[in-house]
Amino acid sequence: MSAVTNAEVTVEQVIRRRVSDALGGWYGSLETALPTVAFVLTWVLTDSVRTAVLASGALLVVMAVVRRFVGGSWRFLGSALVATAVAAFFALRSGQAEDAFLPGIITSALYGVAAVVSILGRWPLVGFIVAIGDPDYAERPTAWRRDKGLVAVCSRLTWVLVALFAVRVAVMLPLYLAGEVAWLGVAKVALGWPAYLVAVVVMGMLLATGRTVQTADGSDDVTERMLQAHVQHEHEHKGPQRRPAEPGDGTGA
Image (cartoon, rainbow, N blue to C red; front, side, top):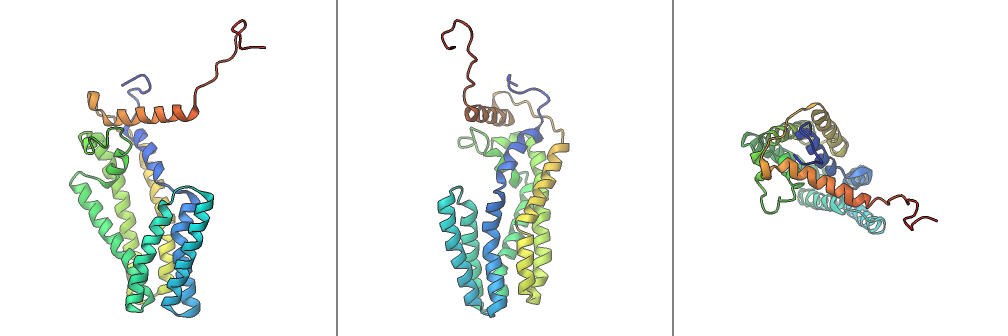
């Protein structure tokens, strides 16, 4: 380990710095939830799938204008746009409002299965999110898998995502089959960012209580490189510290 780290630094401490980047803040949460709210409210008031789809689209345009002025990441608005477009296709094709929620249910099921397979194959999905913090990720995207501690912790975190996807399907599939559009809207919003934040809190608890020792991999130590990169990033953002003036050095009064 270098001077900026020590033997007590755990894998969980390194991962915490990467998992926190997955959050988009309250505005990102609104951008993903509001199109669904607009769709459900409009459908309840008009009983028209086409009008509900148009309302969601109009709201997306308004949010895009707001995002253009406030600045920041377009990632969450882009996700909302894609999700709304796919949902609109399904709903307009069948004429049934509940079909707007079918793509989300299918996606959650597929993500859940993929997450389980990734864990069993020792390629946990969370590992890829964490590994992006490795400065050498572009050249060696799979180097993180040589760190047994990193793979073990990321596998535990991926199980949290599996639980999230399973809850979404377990709640929304029966509502879809029953044609409960209003409750589907409530469930989609509640099981979106609020549930995701709960999952992140659970991940945070696992990371706070875990004490997995970093694997000593010499010059190819992935967690060490990520920690070094984080320290350097913090130093660059803080900027150079101004040295206090000393008597006779010409910088004082």
